[in-house]
Image 1 (cartoon, rainbow, N blue to C red):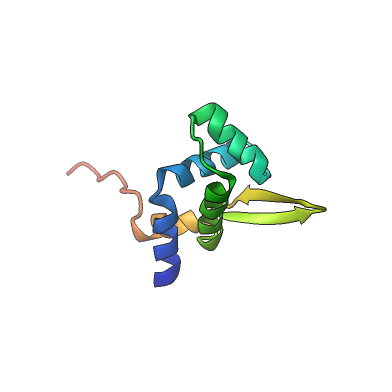
Image 2: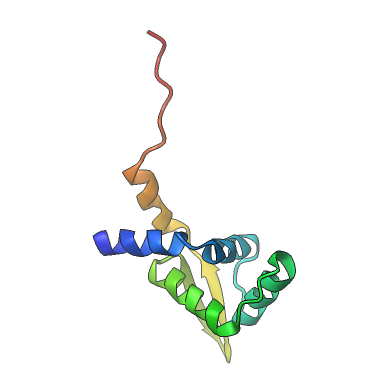
Amino acid sequence: MVDAERDLFKALGDATRRIILDELTDRDGQTLFEICGRLAVKHGLASTRQAVSQHLAVLEQAGLVHTRRQGRYKFHHVDTGPLRAIVDRWPIAREEPDP
């Protein structure tokens, strides 16, 4: 579990990776080409395809992104399931009843 948490926090610790997750949440099932285009147009990020691919690999290692191949294309899908570990570790505080 420690390795999974480390991978999750590492993945979320980078602003570009968080933007990639935002873009996949907005439109799931994108190719590397589509993700690169959205990063450039919407966010002004001129990352190389290799750099974005490396970010996606970190997100995949953390379980936040899954891929699916269809022909020569590879589609990336967001999976928010691993984020449950954060909520489980630090539950949202409930309102205290008045004394």
